[in-house]
Amino acid sequence: MTEKIIENSAYRIVNELAKGGMGSVSEAFHLGADGFEKRVAIKQLLPTLSDSSEFVAMFIAEAKLVADLVHENIVQIYQFNRGQNGYYIVMEFVHGLSLAEFIEKHDGDQQLPVELAVFITSRIARGLAYAHSRHDSAGAPLNIVHCDVCPRNILVTTEGLPKLGDFGIAKAADQYLSPNPGERSLGKLAYMSPEQAWDHPVDHRSDVYSLGLVLFELLTMSKGREKWSSNMRFAAAKGWVDWDKLPRRVKSGLRKILKRMLDPEPDGRYASTDELAHDLEYFIYRKGYGPTVVTLEKYLRELCPSLYQVMPPSPSA
Image (cartoon, rainbow, N blue to C red; front, side, top):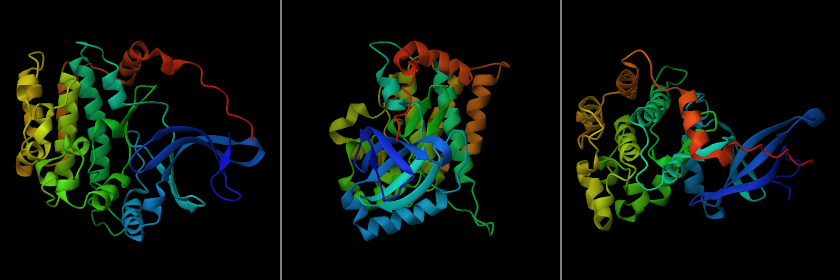
């Protein structure tokens, strides 16, 4: 079933991919001259969000900051517009799966190799380092902070390339949907820094903390605060992590990096995501070799072979 988003639209929706708290995400095609088509993803915001001038103002402000982010480890945003059904965002289409789905594919006691866990984290750290270091045309720092670094917002392509999505969207949603710390969902609290849980001002070091919890989960295949699920808000605010879960195969060098990422105090964490990415890369390449996108692709092929089935041709207009 085809559907045009707006009158005389250059986009055609072909398949709904997911629904979430902010709206739905669909596979679509950007149509051009002489049969040109480019596969894209379109996020249609919920009517309640599109109709809120407060949210739209927040989102537009954030979208302007991240509009020019072009990095291989960030899902690129192409367009933000309004159609018959409200506001929608046109983004890069990523053929793959979310890191949350990737983790769920590991059955029983199956563990992800440590080097691959660090590789995935290092790539997201590189994307964050790029975003955190952006300046405007006058040279002033943009102070971009993602605010929702978590497995469901990280994608792994079928080529083995990790990408961080929802830049700009996540921060606006957090400000609008959860203005009070007590209203935040347990899913968000599972990856929040203490300062974000307290609703204190945050900077790039908050993203470092959240990424640390993602790395912890990749190393243990379980959430770092699962032990306190009945009191998640308190655990997040205190910066508690269940360190007893960390297996012995995680050696002291990596433990040191992880401890620094997950320091409850921002000043105790990495001062920059560039420094973090360097330490993660040194850990996996210190012997002169280590995992690459090819390594991750091969692992993903074995873990989820259905992803590599031939994709059906796009339907005609």
